Image 1 (cartoon, helix red, strand yellow):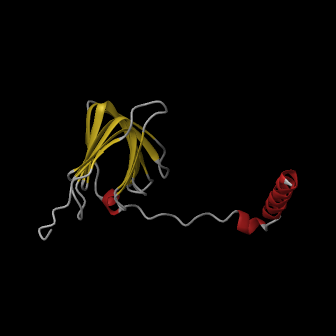
Image 2 (cartoon, rainbow, N blue to C red):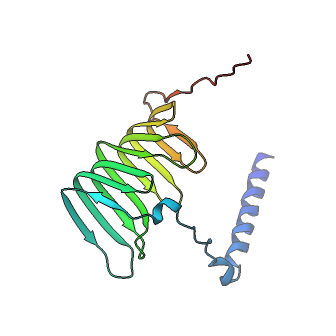
Image 3 (cartoon, helix red, strand yellow):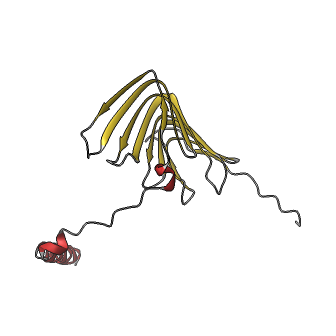
Length: 184
């Protein structure tokens, strides 16, 4: 019975894949709708560093590399690092920032919600998704909440935190403060 079910499952999968391959080309090429940039990424970008290198052509996204005591500031976001790499849209809006340090740090105070700070060997900020990826000895502090792990993904918009350790590593550490209830 099990072999018959497995064979039936493979046949069903093959039929579904075949149907997908026979779809009209216009449907197969449909792209997801473009995402709007996060409001903070439309502010001017101020960067201080010891060295700077830009690579790009007019009208195309550019890659900008900064090294030596880097401070990047845009809107409510500040990143400090030893080295940083930014990708900008042709219009000059921030698409992505990667920062390295021993450790690199970021700070963000959104209009609503608590101050958030983080540190890790590598920090990747994805502007369109308003997310931070912290890799290597990562620490995230959001208000009075604290998280320590090898890797942390923080979505500022949804206030979602995902933390994980390397296989065989120590466990994730988190402190969640008690809420004060005066009537209990």
